[in-house]
Length: 261
Ligand SMILES: *[C@@H]1O[C@H](CO)[C@@H](O)[C@H](O)[C@H]1NC(C)=O
Ligand SMILES: *[C@@H]1O[C@H](CO)[C@@H](O)[C@H](O)[C@H]1NC(C)=O
Ligand SMILES: [Ca+2]
Ligand SMILES: [Ca+2]
Image (cartoon, rainbow, N blue to C red; front, side, top):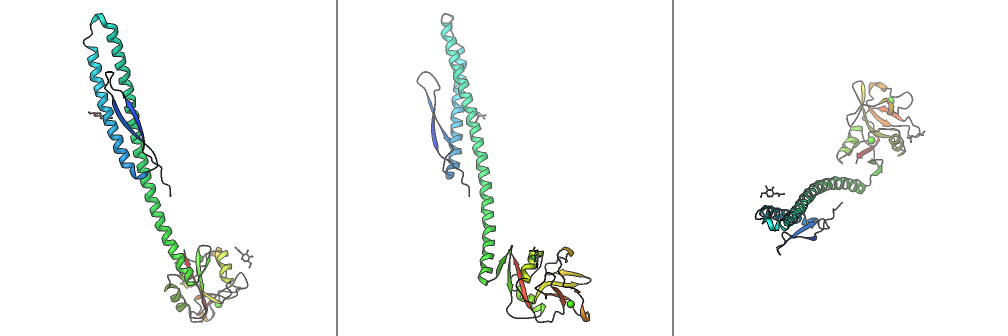
C-alpha cells in the first residue's frame, strides 16, 4: 500500500513588504510525511496565498504613491524609490504565482491519493473474499490445481446425486476445459462422473457451455449411446488420454467436483 509522504516542513518565507521596517512573515507549508495533515497543509497554503495577495495589494498602493509627490529637486531619489517598489512588486507577484501553483499541485496529489486509496481498499476486499474461499475448500480437504479446487468422492452415486453433492458445497461436477485438466482428472484414477451431459443433439457442460471439439476426450467408439439410454459422461479409461464414455445417469460411480477460485 503506497502512502504518499507528506511533511509539514515549515518554510518561513520572509517577504519584506516595505522598506520602512514593515515586514510580513508568510508560512509556506511543504510536502512531507504526514498524510493526515493534508487538509491542514492546504488550509495553510490558502492562508499564505491570501496574505501574499494582501501584501501585493499594499505594494500596488505604495507604488502608486511613490509616483506622486516627487519634488523635481529629488527626482533621482524618487526614481530609485519607485524602481525599488517595482522590483518588490514583481518579486511578490512571482511568489504569489508559485504558491498558487504549489497549492493546485498539492490538491491534485490529494485527489490522486484518494482514488489510489479507494482502489486499494476495493482490491483488498476482493483478495479477502478469495482468501476466504481458499481457506474454506482447503479446510474441506479439496485438492488445488491451476485455479480450481477438486474433490474426488470416496463413495459412489448416480450422476444426479453426485451433482447434488457438489452444488450443496458451492461447487459443481468438474468441467474439463483443456488437456491439462483432462490429465489431472484422469490422474485421480477413478471411474468417475464429470459435469458433461447430452442436451438435444449437443453435449453440454454443467456451467452451460457446449463441448468443444478441441477439448473432447472420448474413448474409442464413444459416445455410442448404448440402448439409447446414455446421456451422461464418466471418465472410464483413465489410463489413456481419450477416456470418456457416455453412460446411463443411474449408474453408481465415483464423482469429481470442481470449485473455481
Ligand atoms: C487576490 O484577491 C482578489 C480580491 O481581493 C481576488 O480576486 C484574487 O483572486 C486573489 N488572488 C489570489 C491568487 O487568491
Ligand atoms: C496429457 O497426457 C498425455 C499422456 O497421457 C501427454 O501425451 C500429454 O502431453 C499430456 N498433456 C498435457 C497438456 O499435459
Ligand atoms: Ca474446469
Ligand atoms: Ca457409452
